[in-house]
Image (cartoon, rainbow, N blue to C red; front, side):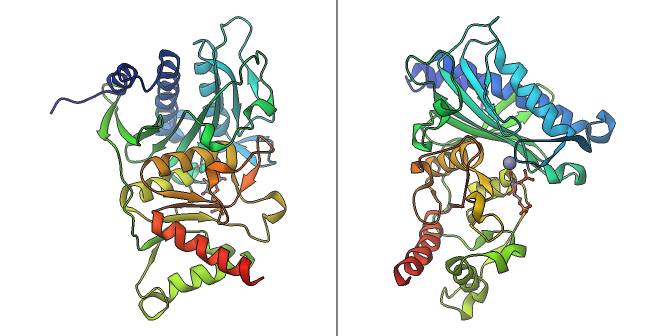
Length: 337
Ligand code: FDP
Ligand code: ZN
């Protein structure tokens, strides 16, 4: 079998009229940045990249050295290519304009440069998540408000998972595809085309230590999963929680399941735990393009109208039937109330 590189895949997508040259360049540049992040992560303690940076981000979370480094790698890689109008990141309060020295393009890029950063220092998988939007017509100096487009407006989304191997999972709106990094050659190779998430599942992912803070429908939903064969669902479920969204979602893309970070009393005032624009939306597009579903528990995630760059949302995504089941518990509880 001849292997298909990311470059070849993107050229073929371009020939098929599914992407334009600018978007092709954008994806290649992001992939190249992810390779550099992967190399830095792989060096671990030998590269002096572990531990805290001694700074905080916009959400008031302590930044790791790798959070800061990954953000810089992505910004630097994307500045010069002429494909972007601006970038926004979990690590920066406001969008970063493209420096005047470089030409500007038509796309807006959002990213979570290093997702799951609590796992860096314990050598567990982390990732990068990105989302691509069009810069609104006539806007030459995009600011936060120009990024506030619903997830349905995304033209591409992807994530990289830095695990035992480094993978890039990508959609440009025509299916979800997996590429594996050939570390010796330095090239991403297509290893799964058109991934389909199994419809039925017996696995769920949730941080169960928050259980006492959950809303009633979530309590009931997980209670019924835990009740197993003897409960109303009539079968046993298994639970997994890596605490890197990228790693948890990748498992679900691969073998099915539901990932949830619901509303709870601790995060309710903020609207949820996960960020809409650069965590939930790109993952929701990838999951939908793989035949799965993504919801806030009360509506389709991709249709949420954003009100802030760093806005948070409750998230339920993965195998279609299981996401629909979780949504049903919320609908029933809301109807009874
Ligand atoms: P992190 O803050 O470590 O980057 O992005 C938010 C996130 O990780 C997700 O990757 C992960 O699913 C979740 O938070 C982990 O939350 P808990 O600390 O509650 O386990
Ligand atoms: Zn994250």
